[in-house]
Length: 437
Image (cartoon, rainbow, N blue to C red; front, side, top):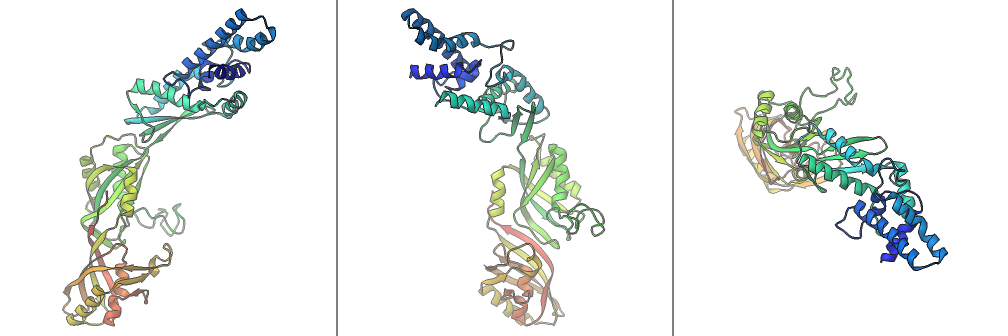
């Protein structure tokens, strides 16, 4: 093994001046516990000693000539400094680790974080040099230049800021761009889970860009770029940005209610994602109060807690039953008995729904089977042309079409069972029943 290491090191050294870091990195998988510069210095010293031993033991000029170049470079480059010839592999990069650590620390100023990670984007020249030295040496024990750079800069940042490096889940990543001589930050989003209630109709859940101009502004949207002046998302967003110093927010809801529907009861689960936040240690009770005051009775949020990225998928995939209160109008007068009979049919039969006409432009045209857990009428108007109905059903059931039938795309339907045209005039979600995070 020793001869193999020294032979490989000799092939590397005759290529030109090389720093302790770069030759040590060619043997990074050996003698763990040493830094690459320590490993490199030891190898150079061993080569120099090997030459001295051979010179004292033999007069074979051929063998000595083979050993001499690597021995000379070993002695000459041991502990290379800035005023020496630059290392041809890293171009002197490892003489400036402290400088890069300071650049990272400067870039991190103003951000709250507990964990971090360093990444490196080598220049094209450094990548090429590394490929050459690996091919020339035939080493089997090397690690990439960027791995050592990440580790060495990370150790200095960790010691200076008293923060922990985390390979799996860092709050922030400092990316060292060698060619551009700058540090870029990748800041992990902050996720906040909660429940929202919507107390007025006509508000969508998320921002809705104008269909005509795609958000750029036109006469159709009165040059606002939006189909609606505000949304649940936009009523929550401003205070989250203020408290976290985030660049923007992304809203993730556990399903959605129609624009003209209320969201009552305990509300609908959601996660708001603060993008590139400067602050993470925020008072969620205070944030909740600020959001609700800003929303001025249009929406209300509750139960705010910190969440993580994986929770977004959990709330989107969660299976939840929903309870609705519907105000239904009929084109003709109906009796209580007739309404009860029609409701009985719906409660005992699986509902087959083809994608409704109103959402066909954004949903796949499929047939889905959904079940109703219970359905009952709460009140029938004295003139028999409207009623209030409550029902609990599987998530994904289109309740407006359950009433209207959507020209036969939903079967059975309340209207078809009654033999009378029926439609929902008001819809409220009064409970969402499921496990989310």
